[in-house]
Image (tube, rainbow over all chains, first blue to last red; front, side, top):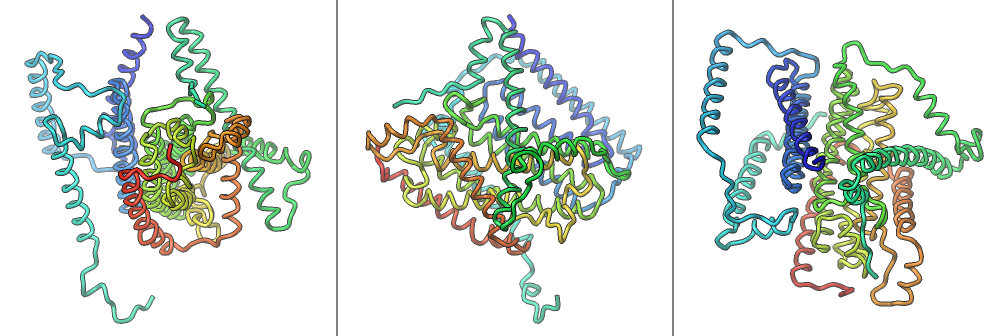
Amino acid sequence: MLASAIPTLVFYLLAAISLTLAWSVVTGRRILRAAVSLMGVLAASAGLYLLLDSPFLAGVQVLVYVGGIVVLLVFAVMLTRTTELLEDHPTRGRQIIGGAVATGFFLLSYNMMTADAFVGRTLSPLPKNDVAAIGRALLDTGENGYALPFEVVSLLLLAAMIGGIVIARKPAAAAKPEAFHG
Amino acid sequence: MSWPVKTIAERTGDLLPGSPWTASVYVLLTILAVTAFMTVTGLVLIYAERKIAAHFQCRLGPMRVGWHGVLQTIADALKLLLKEDIVPRDADALLHILAPVLSFAGMLLVMIALPMSPSLQVADMNIGVLYVTAVSGLGVLGILLGGWSSNNKWSLLGAMRAGAQIISYEVSATLALLVVVLFSGTLQLSGIVQSQEAGWWIWRAHGCGIVAFAIFLIAGTAEINRTPFDLAEGESELTAGFHTEYSGLRFSFFFLSEFLNMFVLAAMTSTLFLGGWMPLHIGHFAVFNGVMDIIPPGLWFTLKTTAMIFLIMWFRWTFPRLRVDQLMRLEWKILLPIGFVNLFVSAACVVTGCYFFAR
């Protein structure tokens, strides 16, 4: 009994942490604190993946989101502002629009969730806890393989990288100053 | 000879169905043991750093407290605990308090996965290498937040430098790490150790191993902000970098995690490239291998890690500090291309299946 109670307990704990931190991401007026709360939300979802027996996904979640995206976010905030500035309160109009959008989205997702019975679909279950199987599936050109999406994603990443370099590059004229007076 | 791996997590799992309370006590004891291990390792490392630094400079180092000053770090730690704990008035108090904890957590979570011996490893994850790379990212966040929340320009500059440096060198370190993953064919840390039974990857992998080892060591030294990459806290430029405004217990958190990061780096290097707890084996020389097997695996791990720590401390008194632009050039124009070529060559080696010491 206890062995099955522990995952349930952990799930509710993680869910409570996620919700609390997500709330503080949205309502917080200090942008860096919001970033830290966001990190907590992302880490908690990694915990949820662990509960679902997918440690690889959890690892990638922490690697990409906590170690990559949040660090970049914090870095960008640090570059742009040095002192403690509070975000402005949103204007009345924005509050109304935001509230309407949030309510609409809530109703929509609530309807979707109640409409579907959530029958477990087990078309091609992956062998659990096996990184090798995930790797083979990613490079499999067969019927259940993911080679095409994998290549498309890598193409997308390449395009994003080239775009980043093009934006960061100095214009050709400015790149060669005649004399540099440091 | 086979090496059955039994982790502490597995032992707890075995206890759980029978008596959950015994399992809980076991978990508590493990936590206590890990904490004690970290504290003692930290104290020993700080003492070793001071002694080794002193001897490199023809000094004696701490000599007064205890025999050859062995109790000096304990005295210093006690002093640090009694110091006033200051949060600057204009600092973001919450983040100021959270930052050292994050920095410490990043190191602590890696510590859990380290294979110290077949019977001494807290958790042996299938995604071991990925896990280590992922959770060590928390350390950067701690440094960045610590520097920013102090509301001090030196802290901010130090944190920015440290952040840029760690993010950049992480790429090279990961590329070097992937070489070992390619050769051993597993992400599991104990699996990587066991794949080195016939020879360590540093030389068994055709030169790719030694290049990857060098890259990993350089990038790792940069990631833990040690000389010659200690621009983040260069005293002459930035007072003390990101931890300028920290004092007392919170400063000691940063300090301790910095030293223990050195241990983690040394342990990871020896696990990946020097065979971890695996004794020194040469091909199929049964007699030699048998003699080496007499030395217990835990001792092998300790010896290799100690050697690596000594090497990293040696760096500190050998190389001058790099400038920021040199630092970035070293990473993006030298290490990264070499790392990519090395990864490519080792992939070719693995695909064609040529090893010096075939199984």
